Image (cartoon, rainbow, N blue to C red; front, top):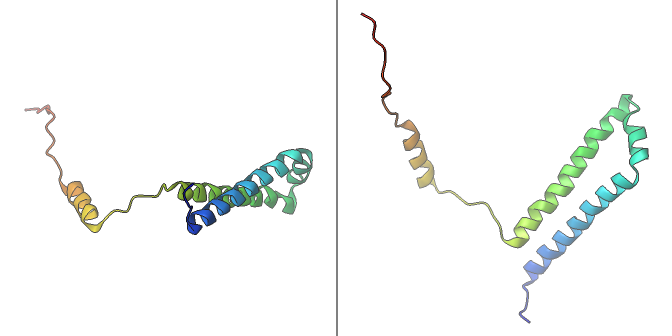
Length: 105
């Protein structure tokens, strides 16, 4: 069996921990749906609870998704300055309108 590098092990461990955290927050939310509904519908300062919960879910689930992709080796492509300059030049080129026009005399 091939040896797995320690950095890969760390990435995998972090991914598993974030997966567990994600499953945990979803389980806690759905297991306590009636309590959540009671507090979230009170109004006043309780109106901030759904927003804070959405932020928490976004951070935890987003961290898991990012770490999962990193563990799988899927990364964003890095563009070079040459390709950026070439794209700007392409955008500057405009074509003359070739559509027929009606001319009134």
